[in-house]
Image (cartoon, rainbow, N blue to C red; front, side, top):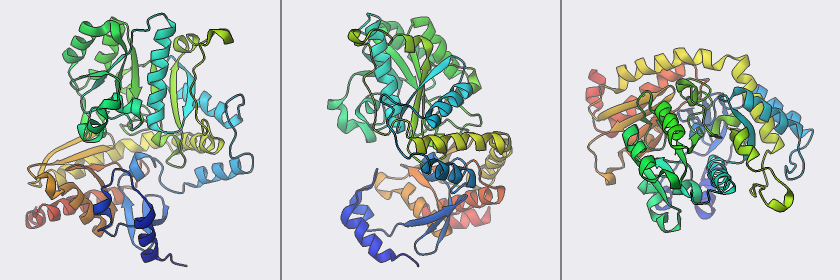
Length: 435
């Protein structure tokens, strides 16, 4: 039986508040209501189909309704759906922790679970501060991040963020952090040299700043940051919530510059987009800094109701098994090359395209010269929907981040639809057809 789309839309507008959405504009549009999905195809309640061009917010690495992940969640349902990890444990969390330690850069030996990318970052920030305090250096309260950084939407993660559009309103609520120029090691070193004794940690998104509009760092920058942290004796937090699990072409972006951070924050693709789960990995050195007698109060006093949820851990284990069994990263190399060719052929020649930024399967297509009120990025989104693809803009930067499992024919169609949508929205349709 087909859902009643009109009734659902009316109900949505009367009760829901959507994230990162101006609700006044939302009420004036008929956005798709997704009823079901399979692979890289989304189906709405009106029977329309769309290529999922953004992995449902960058997380469905193996696509929708993957049989192995579906089966793993069903098996776990027959065991236990939820159990706390405060004073208890369970097999899926234990096995997943061991698997993550095995996959992670060398030296990361301990896994602390939470439930979103924001909380994974919060855990790292709080651990870093408490670790220093328990070393007797309580004055290390400052964090260094990058301009245009995005690390989540909770207060701690916003404190180390650097996108005024998202974060500026909340400045009075935030703790102090200082920001280096992206890709500029001299800027980073100046901050550490001048105020290093107060710095607890540096936090970066390795290789690519996602919400900044797919801002790609120069080669060697991450390695340079690691060396500066070592030189000035501060901790390094790598936020791989967006760039992890194959997005840049390797399981973790840190691998590409042989960097082992002191903290690694993971979420999004960890469960293949099935269930909320995050993990903060850290070193034995940090872990041991929290050991002591009960009365010393060195415990890390932090936790979540759904920390290490069994269903989510089962989905994550299955997701990692699919990476191995289907040789996802090996097959991805050819798709990354094809994506570059398609963008060069169909998108780069468009007059409205100012720049294409790309690393692996992360693409930002920046449109140039349009006023804010034109909402060109949003207009491209609407034009792409009409053609059968879901894309999502960051301002006037169109983001493409399809599932790693996307087949070549759908990848071609996604890029062609994106090019046609840009041409329509920017009034360059005739030029696009001539090209």
